[in-house]
Length: 147
Figure 1: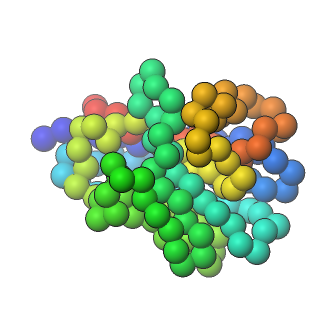
Figure 2: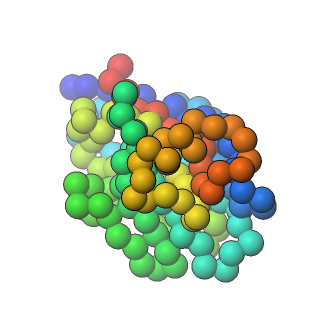
């Protein structure tokens, strides 16, 4: 049985009053278990779009899913029965990954619209910056790895 560790890290504010927060700490889970990665947000928008991204080692962030009000979509490779998120009234959008696989080990980012979905090189550049001038609100996400 494989063990996963999820590292939650501090926030980076990247646009005005909008921000997302992924709390610090560790969550440990075994292969086949479920894990929930937390994300809360603050925004002046009455209709926020929230996104989750997965970044494998030495790779760019990959779009996992987006949520808007009571609707949303998952990228085809991130099946809705395993990668589950709901935009909640308390301004949170936790990501639950069910039936963990070793390939789920990665850094997970929560992001608030506006964000980049088509230009991965720009997105990667923006996530690496700590300035407040890029059009993405994200944290240096939660990291899962095999222990």
